[in-house]
Image 1: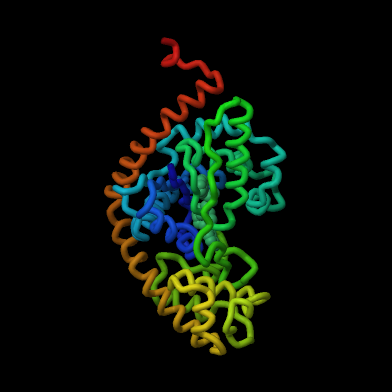
Image 2: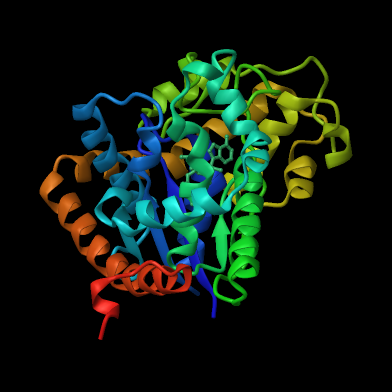
Length: 336
Ligand code: TYM
């Protein structure tokens, strides 16, 4: 059976990379599969979060999921901290994962920077919580952007080692689903740097809540090169900014990269940017508006999360019970 799980952090604005690398694909998958989508607030607190902002960011990201087209009746949508089994399984996985595995994680190195001694223990152990998020549901497929690939490999290693250590085929080895033409959306200011909600430069990213004027301004200012546009994807090689903008165009329009190249063969960037702006406003405008409407109704968002959490707990609780039995942890409900 295919079961989809994915997660997103409630840290600040949702940006175009989140939409094209994750949310857009989540929306497509919901039509064919059982899906569980989680706002991972426990991951967010691995770096400092203002408590009031964390709660409102959790609601805002939930609004983003719904506004992008996810149906809360069809899918399970919830915030991680309401399902305690994630944290409980994460502890078991912290005892399965090896220090050497975590030492290789590039995201930790990037986020901790030069001051690793000052990073939280949680930031370091983050991938074992992520493995628990996925495996507490025995999910088989995980749609993510390319930056999460290494964490998915670690999840598979954890599942495999748990199965080997206890001599039981218990956890599936989940597959990453890295879909679409924009699996790694880059900064609009620097085509070698990932677009990110934590980038200090607001001009580096397009937020789902940006107005049409803001979108137009950021695309107009986006870094380019001085060549004309190529007729084939090969002509995008060694042109990181052009490749990024073409990937964004392809992903937003559902055209192939070949078709986008053919459409703009020999054109100037100004013509391309004008069309990209129109496309981005048509796709993102309604999402931003719907997000604003949903955010003004926190009671509804809280109800969606409460309902999703209950449904998630119903799946997670028996899996955790089995894990405790396998590991040999004594529970009073096992004594009869
Ligand atoms: P997060 O919150 O950083 O990002 C959420 C999703 O958006 C994708 N993404 C991008 N894709 C393409 N280009 C970009 N510039 C870009 N920026 C972000 C991410 O790849 C991700 O799919 N550790 C995860 C959250 C998580 C999770 C999980 C994911 C926690 N538990 C279990 C899957 C399964 C993270 O920090 O994503």
